[in-house]
Length: 124
Length: 278
Image (cartoon, rainbow over all chains, first blue to last red; front, side):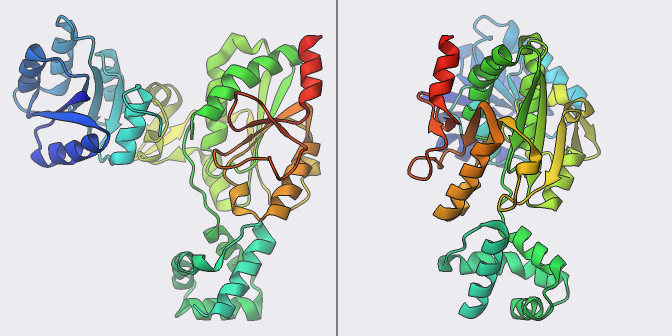
């Protein structure tokens, strides 16, 4: 079973994402900000990360840059999941090492479609 | 909804679009006609249908047929047909055409996601097209859908279904809340309102026809009639791509399945074999 770390400061969003990802057969772990997520990854690297952008303590982009610089940090597939929806923000995320990008609001169909895009689940 | 009214609507829809509505679709007809009745100021669906019976108002009839057709589509829907197009069909046509024009017909173009997906593939292939030009015709029974296709404006939800983010960055610009497709991709696509039950010989000949998720709504004689007329519109031999739940088998032998490529059919495989061997 693949592990997906859901990084979001909203408990509600984490809960919604957890339900969708568990339906897609992921074991789900949660982190409330980038710093918590980084600690989690440094002890146990997940297969996938669903990553919010704007969070307290450490935001998604800073987390991603730290992660990609870490040993083994190139391995997880990172899918942003954020209300940021400007072209420049998306481009910045991809340049910083994100594999896919979801603009909120999202539903299970979008998550499945994007996860299929990066080979995490079977095509829709 | 009275059974006689359902019968009236389903006959009208079948005659005009080929779409078959079985009696178990009553709820669907009701749920799709209610907004039309409301919008046009009728007190109920019954009143709307009575008005159509009496006045035969073309605009109302079009609205009803349009409401009953399914326009569900998204970028790179089902993925496989697009992989086949990129990896098998285009290389074969590029070798055969030697710098000519490759003509594709999207016979149920809906809101444009299929033709635009094909245009994105062609653009990404660049020099591998060997100077060939891709020309796409998108037709659909729904003028409303084609208007959207022409505008090339999509919602945030639509650009997240099937479209890889790199393609979004490459081919779209944000305009307010909407995403607008690159004008460059529009250059080689034309759109035209077209009912598959009508004579389509005037469209000319094509190398490839995408006709996905349309035939499933037709009855057997209509499927056969449409497929056999499509076989007349391709040459070379030409290709046909059907939806995942559709087949020519048991319907017509004017197209043959291509082994190993699900959903792909060719007009005359013996000719294709001879050409490949030559």
